[in-house]
Length: 293
Image (cartoon, rainbow, N blue to C red; front, side, top):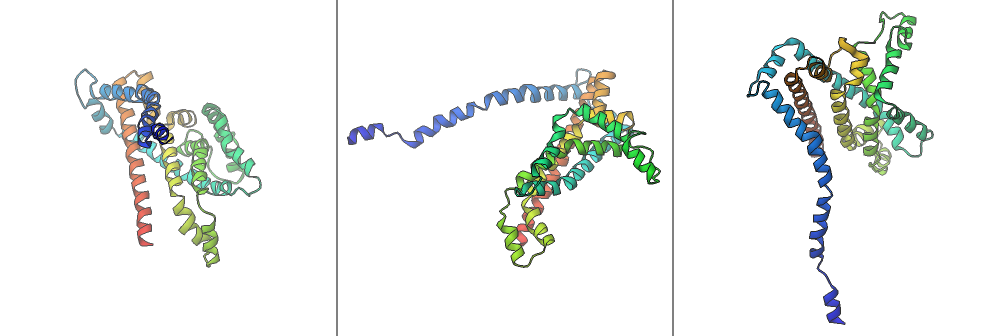
């Protein structure tokens, strides 16, 4: 019996290696798709931007950064993305707090209202905002009724920010809800039992513990807003040119592929730098608060 048991026994370490190898093979399809659909086009675009005439040159980048118009388009894209991210965070955080509390009445209705825009294409949503923000839209009539001099918000930067906030709000709320639901409910209750008011509980417990969700949601919304084309093109038009619209114009209308590739690469690098700096400061501030405490 002992010999049979010894022969049947298999070392655990011997099982782990094949399992890990097979688990790693599961990533191969995703890696291939990622390489074909992202890495290879990125490499081609990078080479096209640096070699417009078949040899290495900074001509396209020099043209971009020496022209005030193109610099203003880059700055506008970053500004619109940042304001949109801040707006979705301010609006979405209270909604996420409400949704993270399962005992709240009407929670299912609020969840539906938050994710309902995702069931409709961006084109349809943008045309809806064209009607709302237009000269005869609801907002224009409200401004006229209360005596504000604003004629309409269509084809303005403010209108683009409003539309983008509506489009990307679900991504922020979903990121925040997942983070808020991981907070132990006993922590706020313990703080209140020790005399802490609601503001102290929020600033010392809820907000710091939800920073991972804030960071994730902010990065997602900022990247989506910076790369968004349909909504800025329809709601902003030529009056509010942004980087994706510039890529479309130079690549498909002017057929200047080297310059369009340079604009796309500049947008990618700028977005990556902003998100990296933002993530660094959020994590650095969070770690400093832990050290102080």
